[in-house]
Image (spheres, rainbow, N blue to C red):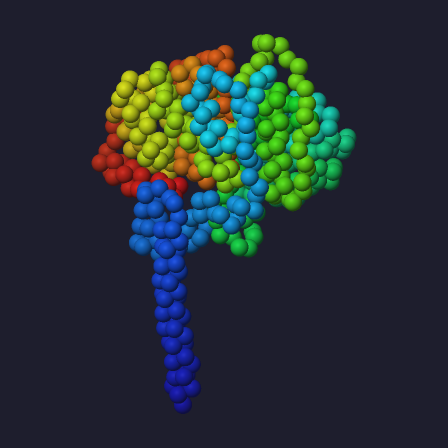
Length: 475
């Protein structure tokens, strides 16, 4: 009797597990086929396509969820909801200085550079913090801030307190945070700011349906604009690792720009575009302003956005173009170096034809996977005659490029496939010789703290680097 009572439930339980396991297997197989078909339809690089194919086929229970979350590059349906930041532009006057970059950017409808800007490099975390505080304290009408990371630390708290104080005085304060980069920032942490009358928004919230592709489309831009007259942009986030009121021997090395002049309008327009996408609020176009300056302040500067809201890949295409055109030097400072094959090949050829190619990277970054992925690329450039310099004192987070005496680029984009093809990024192209030389001088000071060359690697390390290189497009 006892056995009879439990025979049917046991049978049903076995049947349930059999059906559920078979169903999940079939569902996973069908879903994998659908994703493979979608993958093959996209215009990806062969290396990216191969990496995703291998992951989905060999590790379907890992590859399928990862592709659903991270697989989209410029997800057409999702990205198309954000208005394009660039339209047709004309009126670019002839400029022979940095002509190759200008031509590449003009082909991607990037607005032309503006004359009459005042630019200052901000190389230290204490100076960056002081400049930011000054901009906040002196603003009269508006303070617009975009950042990838807002720290839940004394620096983040101090900046929020200052913004809240200005909001309570009637200044229009708007803070735009990336939902992945600032995932530790809860609404309670922001309450003093919103209670003072400021507006806060999160870019591309993760807790949203449908979630497909949202993890991949991150706003990595760093922009602070005060009164549409002064701007701070570059690589530094608003956290203790990047800036602070007092020196900290553990603080990361970074680089930013203080900008005043007509180019500020382009940064303000970029903020307004991002804000409208995140909130639905249309702030309109910035008002035209006059920026009186002296000849010493007459810097030719061009704001270049990159990401799903830009047609094509202007930042990437400009970099590849200037590498091929470089005659004397191509210097790069970047925390992560995971380029695609074309960019690597361009650096390879530049080194072989005698261009002074220098790559300055941290001896050890904060991401082991990125350090493994970069190994084979760095060695390829090194073997072609390039110089690899490992910055040893602390983590190096700056992003900068110098080409000959013609061009300096400072911005938020790392020299990796995620920044160049996926993230929303921004960079400032500087075409004035004084600014190019100032950036080069800053780089030389970094190089004095570097170790030249790459350490020998074991067979295990070599195998790990080569395997991770296959998966580099997924990082």
